[in-house]
Image (cartoon, rainbow, N blue to C red; front, side, top):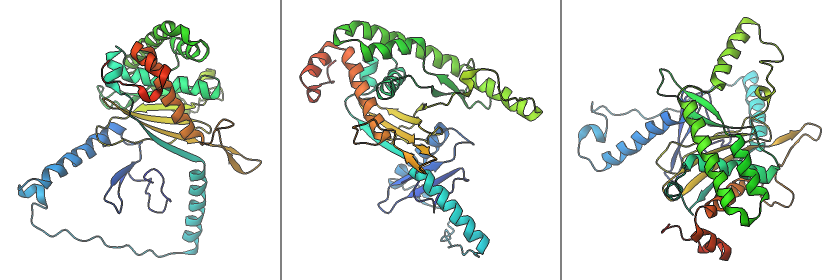
Length: 348
């Protein structure tokens, strides 16, 4: 509901919109061009903590307006409706309805383990989840995606983000081993997983330290377009024009299930994930492909899947995370051989 709603009370041209529902639950819808997720996360985290303090405080400035003036009640705006404005509203509503129909969102809570378990296995939680995202995509679609993860560059003046190309040779080797080798190759798979995670951590450090390539190429592209020297071939790099079918980001919030963001490419996914100490949240968004001839959206879920593409991929990620965790401990391997429900992650 926060993500899309019905479009009638969503102001996507604003920096952010605070939404409060009838049951008192609050959320926020953010337009991301002006700031990145950590900024809003810190802002609303501060508001959340401040409100908690105010509820148990007798300090005047925490209880209301320090000036003592009465806060004016909101006033309902009355609009002068013209036929031209009415037509524009109808056109916008129809376009929004099409976008909603082409968008799937699935939020899942995985309570089996979190970063505490992954750290005990001496691996980066972020890298561990990234390998699971790639493995799930490979199992579902039979190939590797053009995948990216965002990394912050806030240590630089006016720094925003850089992109991490998450598909490395080591990641491909791990994914294919998991998909095609039998269960007797557990040690090999674990070795490949550790190597893939190590490589990913190195790529993250490079991006955060300003050694990434995407933002530099984007800057050059903008300059070339302003000068009229940007041709059809771009930089002459095929990979530069390939659609990104898997965009990912680790959520920065420490309160609640966090949030997600929309997919850009048709047939593509975005995944925002929050890794807590002993659980995880996955926000999966999928943009369905549109069949122009039939005039309808095509569901990307595999044949036989009862779920649509977003929840189907979310379940594939959870399955991948569990399979990878089994590699990390003999106790987990024994438990998995009996039943997933017998897994006990508390003493590993």
